[in-house]
Length: 317
Image (cartoon, rainbow, N blue to C red; front, side, top):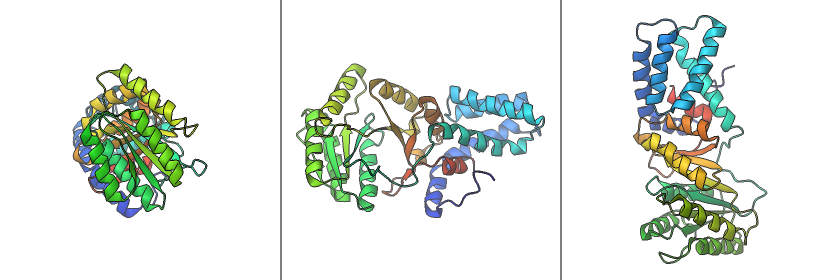
């Protein structure tokens, strides 16, 4: 049975379909031109498909993998009609995503053996980092989990203020200091406060500067080290937030941050306003880091737990 013959949660799936509508429309417009006048998947079609995938921000390396997989199927099946190409693409890309996103969560969950569960969030300014933290806090809070936020991006007053707005909006406590304070000190205080309050989840915001990778690396390492004085195995997850609308620039950000610190999961935001949804496929494949969340709208409910089958079904709808 096809992986795609599943019953998806209708409301969530409708939001995802709508969020990926621009990516879907753009992709199929290009794909239609790529196979125009062709009934069989041949070398010309594969060359055109390669261009479609690259220009859809899937990335060159991942595109080559997908093309090779389809070439293998063409060789094995001897004849593949262009009418089957959509189905084959869905299957091969879902397979590719499965290699990185195996055993993914279906809801906003945290491990039951980690209390408090400490999530450190990294990413450059402007990618939707603070908004993602606020929406995560909302989802965890909605599940009855006690959440504490830490404003450790102390280099911009706006970052502290914005996190405070989200804390007020979703009714969760926040630990903050003055702008210019030591980020590690804020993280330390947040963990101490969270432990004392019996928090289930502690989310630490961090500065998003990339102009000096060495400084960024030193800062994030120090924040981790200081947190471990309070909770020995902190942080339990380092979530990198990427702006999907920047396409190939998101690849560069992922490259910089994975070099600066150990990133364990990804959130890709702003997919609703762009035709660059293919970036999710490429980044997941190239960096071998699971995509945990995707942003498909501005509403507080529009941060979704990433499901590879739902994503591929919406992208290739």
